[in-house]
Length: 178
Image (tube, rainbow, N blue to C red):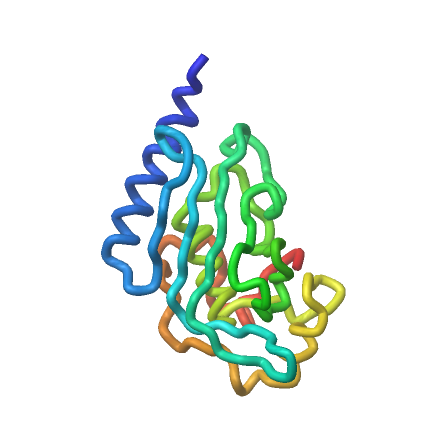
């Protein structure tokens, strides 16, 4: 039996996100599975950080897998059910430890545009958890506290301000639940 609510929601997400991606110089989005799609690969062309053998380096390519589980519109999801960090494997951020990444709580039916917006904020260090007990990557958390003057690493305004579910005025745009 086809779930018409899910199908309608997925169609709306696809149309809105693809329309945005077509106009963006930061985001490219590839639908992977389903009609309408429920899986995507998001490629971000913005500055972020990666850990090298002996340094923290600026990088400008990031790849994230996004999947909307069957009950996504009806129940809260853990970020691990929705997001998979694909590249680079050396991404350096308190909320990212590949393949895990955490944008905080994902409420039922959170829009694809909102998820993309929050990922962009994280990648560019406009948003991060400053608490090691809440971070996926404690080393990056400690580094951030000692290098606040270097953040964010990409000063372009967040790409989807009007679609944000987050308080953009909070200090460091803190993400919850590492």
